[in-house]
Length: 365
Image 1 (cartoon, rainbow, N blue to C red):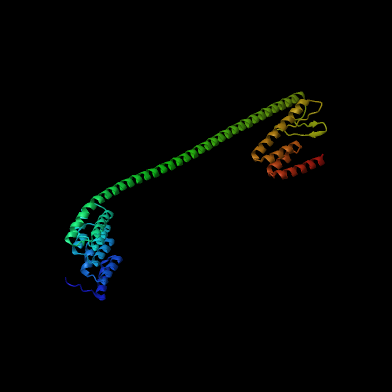
Image 2 (cartoon, rainbow, N blue to C red):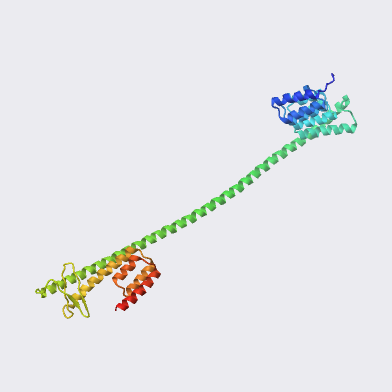
């Protein structure tokens, strides 16, 4: 065999630059440079670069090269589609001296790296017991005998591993089913919570509709009440107006000689009222008393209707309305009441103003 010439650092550096230019990964560049500095040739490192190995497989092939394993082992590693784990097992036991044919025989079965290592370890242990060198012909035969025995044991191990694998798959399925069941329970709980929220919202909506209907009914009752009161007041006003016109007609018929302008006289007080027909009427206490009462009743109801309309249109608060009612009870004049309603002072200010008006009215009397 031709002796390998180690490369100089300059040559290794040039190879490194070339690999970086090719875009090889940094770890691969470092592995090749390390092998070159170790003493491997560029042709040897090219063996694992050409085979599209993973980085783990490259490292194992590099270990085999450094161990200077026989070419048959290197061919076995290169030609077989082996995983990195199986490659590591082959390199380990080939380095110990297990015959290549024994290793190749062990690879015939579809076993895992663990099963392969168990078989080769068993063969090596038996060879160690009898102190037979594996490279001798007798050692090779004995190794095959041991391998046959071990293969049966390993097949049981492989079957056991497959059984464990199937069991693990079942356990994983059960685990997934438990997860699905937990998810199902969680989703059911969420749906129940949403149903409860929906029922609560429906109840609140029903209560709101009930409140709206009740308020509408109360509003209609108030409208009918106001309409009824307005009709009653209009009927009373019309009745008083008719009575007044009848009284004036009676008095005119009794005294045709009286002038168109007359005076209405009331005991302890003299008042003149200008009617729509521009006729002043004089009423004596001892004359037609019923006509005088009808006349004042007409004026009283007219003023009362005006005040009610004014209060309604002013939109006063409940406290202000209470003060207006108190002012009416205390005998404030129409002008004073209208002034209070128009100015709309606060309820507290109204109370003070009413007291002042009562005081002033008492002084005038």
